[in-house]
Image (cartoon, rainbow, N blue to C red; front, side, top):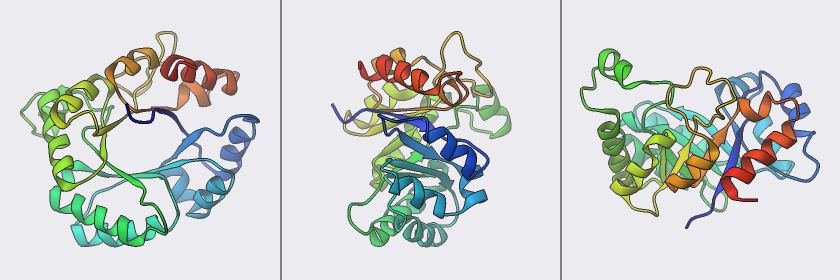
Length: 235
């Protein structure tokens, strides 16, 4: 079984809020995710600062452009020393290959894990079929995108926990899955439509779960983090 971890989605609007959140952790150094809002607001220095504090970091920018542009962008992102980053699988196999090449060329040391987004967890099958004109089922679409991602040489995919086992069946146990859409029955589902608890996600075989509001908006964020870790990691 590959390494498992809980990734905390630091979806904050600025550096001050992010650092105030991270300062609450005295013993743990959570694996954190930085997305578009924070990266575009604060720039690459926020990544460097969090890495300097000893955290692993998933830079979640979901690149999707022509292969040459994505290749050059990945070269720059690689220099930040992130541990994981991503693209959209819908960008085609050629684009994903170009992203991987750029990430490898720009890396100063070990290359970051590169994963591809299959379908966003906010997308329902109905929306996918009616608005994106993808006629297949969600399960078929995610499996197809995952196989394309593997063919491109990437490390794994982002998918909902509901599709993690499907990806494993399609691509093998060594192909990693990163699963957002983690919620508790007593929590707010928010804008997610395909969700699962940490304990149920563990049963799917997924390596990483991404958890935001159930931790970041909890009254006691450290206790909430430990609860998720206990349910997903067994500790």
